[in-house]
Image (cartoon, rainbow, N blue to C red; front, top):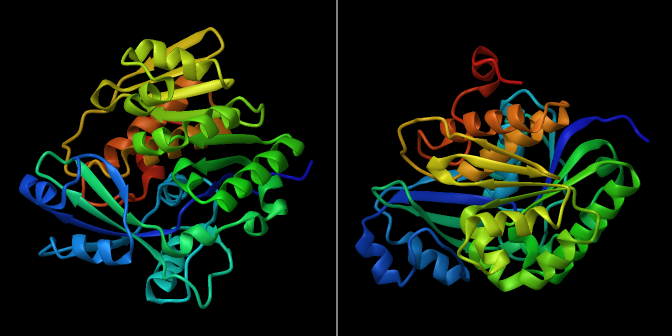
Length: 331
């Protein structure tokens, strides 16, 4: 087995986020459900952009946000994702490396532009995502660096990437490589609409024996189990993998591992923008586990990181989290 060079390797959509505040009537005009994620083409993305009088443009993507959070917490992080050779792609690459994340995936030349997600944030902090996948869809098995997977304690897979068939093949290759190296593979379900599109594939992948840790929020867990009973949904997810984590917003999170059930409260904070809450929770939990922490302190580190990111606009930390976590007595 090779030495561990990274705590967490994220594999997911490399997306540049365009965030702005809107009123609820803008969602009605666009015909989108509040809090959802929908896929749009390039023209559709630009139509949504037109609803924003002012916008903040930052690097994003679920797994990208998670590994940026790991780095902010003092962890060693790497990322595999596909950008294009355009301005957004160059900015994304710069942002990841500036955050302390190793990012060396070759960009896509002469193809689709870098992916964008226009995130409409309403006054209650809820975010509605309109995602143009662009170059991120070109990620395939050949982009999975086997040596990088083998040198990472945990490989974290983003469920949003399940849409393109070759991306699913990349996931399976990464999970198999990690298993062969004795490493841990984690999967996040990402979104209820993603679960509904790919339920059978998710269930198959989760029960394959190559996924050791699964993340879902309450809605995603219910969608996967096709039940309104959250407890039953949690048990269904826990029956598929050795460890499952279900986040429940202001009600905290539940960790299920074998017969163990641990509920961890949310950290109180002023909610400005919920974008990235689940991503940063995963960052804290994954880093805790990579460092050998038990599930409960790992979940508390996740709750701490999530509270920071929802206290401001944007899906990545705006302050170095490592020292703050240490002051709070977290792993």
